[in-house]
Image (cartoon, rainbow, N blue to C red; front, top):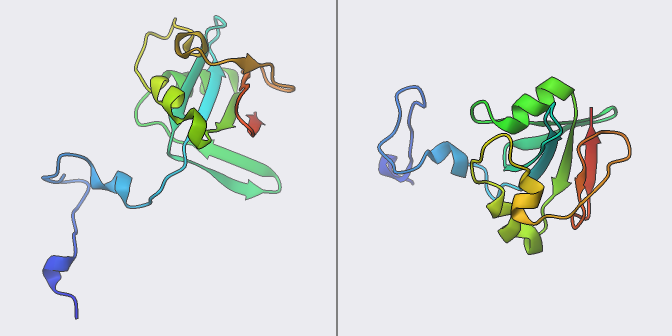
Amino acid sequence: MPEASDFYSYDPATGHPLAHDPIKSFVAPRPIGWMSTVAADGTRNLAPFSFFTMLAASPALLGFASNGRSDSLANAEATGEFTWNLVPRDLAEVMNETSAVVAPSVDEFALAGVESLPSEVVKPGRVAASPVSIECV
């Protein structure tokens, strides 16, 4: 029978003594969604989010959560649009490059050297090398 010391418990409201927040490792592996958005001034934003999911199939509903007020969140709220892009293993390294915090005026597609293609319905483009993109309104 397991001992009490075999289990870890903590109250997120009071914190933890660990180097990193353990809540992020409870569900693993976590797929990464690459969200592309466009600011009101036309600046393209591209950022990875591990807190996203398909919420429903009919109607199709995809959501993502931002830890804090990110440029992606601000753009999606302001325009009502974003594009979710699947990140296969061969794009992992370049995807990591887009996780850096940069000024909102920086085109993150250009900064990371990521080729984009126009979306069919929404203004934010899609990652050209991604095998699956979902345009969201």
